[in-house]
Image (tube, rainbow, N blue to C red; front, side, top):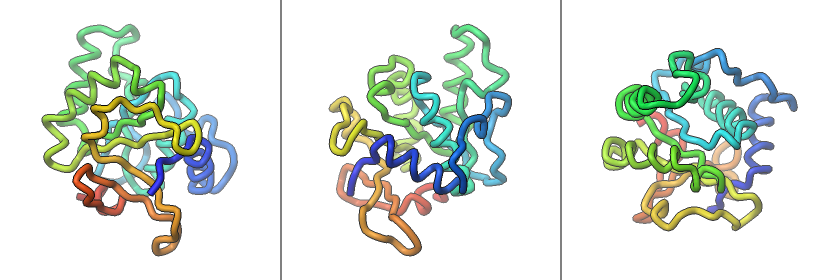
Length: 185
């Protein structure tokens, strides 16, 4: 199993989208992606990683999963405040089925991302509805905080699985689910 690299993940998102241009596909005017799925994820992320956020939306939309991204939510205040925090908390706890931290080096040092992980933990972790999607700058180089090792993580398997590469959710106890199984649970 391997952590995705940013370039590898970008390539997979482009492949799933069926074309090279990603810009503008995930726009700021929609609250959720257009998927008709009943499953939705709260995508925790650093705003410094905007291009990879758009690619993550495409990746999950291709799996028929709705994606919530806070800056696309028109109900959010323009400036962050206590109202912002309360709305994010509501989205994490009851507004979305799953919680995924897009765990880039920027995200693991973000105070907002760490706060969101702390909110999700008691409500999502024991129900197997929380995971990290770690993205390294290059193979084997992810500066994840040690405490993040207690969370399930989405990884890619280098061998072929069914009709393509295998995407799995690996739990700290060594068990795993395919990503599709985990998303549908």
